[in-house]
Length: 303
Length: 303
Image 1 (spheres, rainbow over the protein chains, first blue to last red):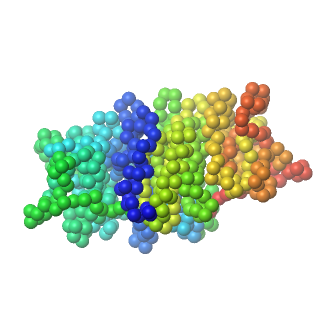
Image 2: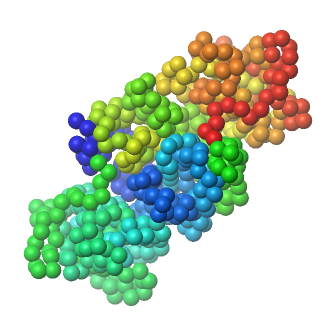
Image 3: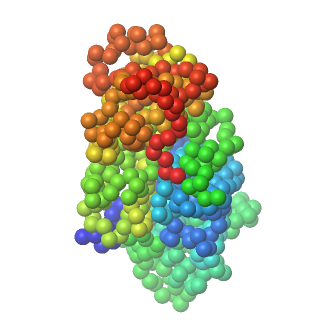
């Protein structure tokens, strides 16, 4: 049996099974970031994300600066999805010795501009040579205990929201997106968010991850889902990756308060796209024609 | 100008220059690990290390389990060299989809056995596909404030010590070494260690790093340097990488106390190999024939 035969989701569950963790670990593998006890009021968040040439970017289409920006911002997006703020980053980079020095300069300019924008300290890293460019950023963040949001808190009756629009990221957004840090912070400071994730592998797959972790089902509505003008089709928009939008759930009462007090003030659109159901009610999409289609854990998967 | 033309040392200095860091960062780039304020008594250590197929291991010569062991232990060695203990790790892995599932199983067995051995919590990671296997481990550790040791504390008159023996790591030690965590902990708990580093790129280069950071010179003696029986020659032993031994300096008084109280008790040999000098006295090796040879920042460099 090969790695591609088992598939990414099963492989990750397989290697994460029965890990020995001490009592200082609040959440290990399985969320946007790990959560570790830190101070009386704050938890420490810890996440990493690897960018591979030819997979996450192509030199012909991305500037070095965009690659650096993307490498850090993907991680900032994960910290945002937990309700936290990013603090300290390390950068591991494999580079080809024959690349122009201007590539390294541009890459680190992109990393620095993202770090400055989102208050991240670049505190070190590692560098080595390889045939392909690989950038791995690891990021420590912090979250107020009461503002921490995981994937597993969605409850039957919750309403499901998404920021911005999904799809068409490949046309450029995946290289220059702004992680929804400010939006996430406003949300967790002012509302009780039950579950949240950043949409990195497609809306359908990432909502599935919330449902899987929460032991719930859901129904979403095609005519409510905000699709980017860059998306080739609705189908592609909901299954393609790297939107880096926030996908989250709130109880109905909280959602009403959100509509009344916050929605109009937010610069970024937030759209209600569906509701959380019992697990036994499954995971479905109601199409424009009113047809119910069953949804699966389908989206951007590496294996 | 290409990356290989500027070289690794200058490139790292170039990209680390003038990074904006807030007051919570005690040491940024430039040591074995970054150091960040944590609690009243403890600092947080943060490090990462990337392993690339064909550079740090070859599938024909290394088992998956050895690769996993090495990936985590390189980082444990960095935490040890700061006087700390490792606590939380993330693993980013690029794998070929056509690899057997047993490769992934073996890799994570190696990671787990190292984690269990050294008290590390594996709290998550990232996984993607790529043509070459790349494993990047990032590791958070902690150090008692008064036990923290950096590269920059070596002072004129200090004596220079190394654990174990150097050289010949390529014959197998680089895949199954035991990071000197226990030794480092005994040292920092019981003695005032002025500077420490783990020997990852060769004794000469890593001692140069201590001297460069400390603004000092040094003299080391060929007939005192412990060379592994696996080493092809003395020359190769002092310039080859991946020994993962501790290289450290102590004042003379402290060294006398170390000789009297500790040396005989240590299971791992610790050898006096030279002394720290004024910067203007340079960096030299006294050969067996009594000849003084000037040493440079030469060793394992990626570019």
